[in-house]
Image 1 (cartoon, rainbow, N blue to C red):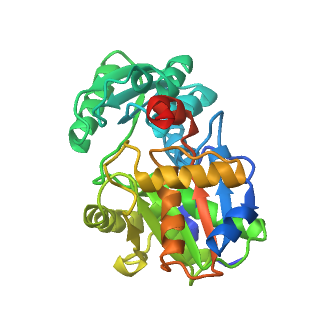
Image 2: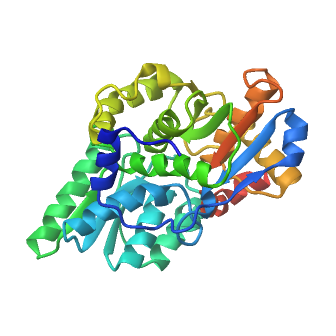
Length: 341
């Protein structure tokens, strides 16, 4: 196993961590899709990471809850879209840790479909006992964070000890540390040397962590982020803006830079939280050839970055490719009307 640079090793050792992903999620080869696309496709099953319905945010929450518990918090607050997997997993992992959860739901998707507003992750948030508050704007991260910090101040005034998990790109992406651990796990699982790793790129923390893990443990592997929230130019600006704070977390100036960044937004349209043609094709391929489910918001659009790019030659024939399945399957039921259509 690669020895970490001392500064990065010290940074990871010092960051408080609350274990959530206690067993490495499986790493599986998918034979039928490999044959169909002419590549050697593997999938890291982070949809199984953490509590029920799982997902990649479990890895991030190990560090956010670690920091919260280190500060003596009794309540965690988080904001996200109505069907946010991050919000649902925060409520679940807070329950495991004996903390209260306040989840703020933002209106990012213009729909009055009752399934979207009542099913999937929304239903699970209620079942998990989270207190739900609302933020009426969907594309105002700073405003949503400000509302959450204001709620935290109200909780402090009545004697609570709140911890805010922020959304905005202006805050250090603490959760990205969890995906360094994910790439480290590949060595424990005797993974092949991958030519390409493809992962969804939304808030950016998972993508940053994968890039950092590859720099440390899998140098030479290309990491491609498939855009699920914003178009490639905007996502590039976001990630470049987050890199200095992430490098600071690792005590290593300039560790990640623009040369590490590869993005693809071919499945994004018509926008966040809306099913795309390329995403629907990828969902059907995974379901009908491998019996595995993807969700329309994140993993279908991310996996489309494998399907479309393998077919157009951007991923070479015979390449060894890892797709990181980041979860989100509870959200399938919020989109049942569109999926049936």
